[in-house]
Amino acid sequence: QVRLVESGGGLVQAGGSLRLSCVASGLAGNTYAMGWFRQAPGKDRVFVAGIKSIATKYTDAVKGRFTISQDGARNTVDLQMNSLKSEDTAVYYCTVATSMGTLLRGMGSWGQGTQVTVSS
Picture 1 (cartoon, rainbow, N blue to C red):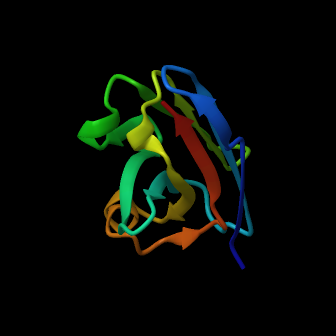
Picture 2: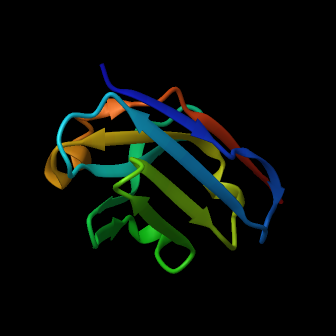
């Protein structure tokens, strides 16, 4: 059974930085796509960033501000978030899937989420 545990959320002022981390366990095989979605109050869960090996994808809203990284050997994925804005406030969910396509469709496994609040 796949289990994902996120950490690193919190409260930060606009313009500040946070780093989210996620550790996956129970994975079979070697290479997985890992990534992050977020869900703001009253809105749908949406894709933020994904990575598989050296390939990365970002939603336009975070390009140039967020950086995703993966340690395949340890099954971890981090999201470095800089220049945070109030509109980045959301619950951030870690996800893992066998392919980037599956991940982007939101059909992977999920963590429990971690709250990120950006005060203006």
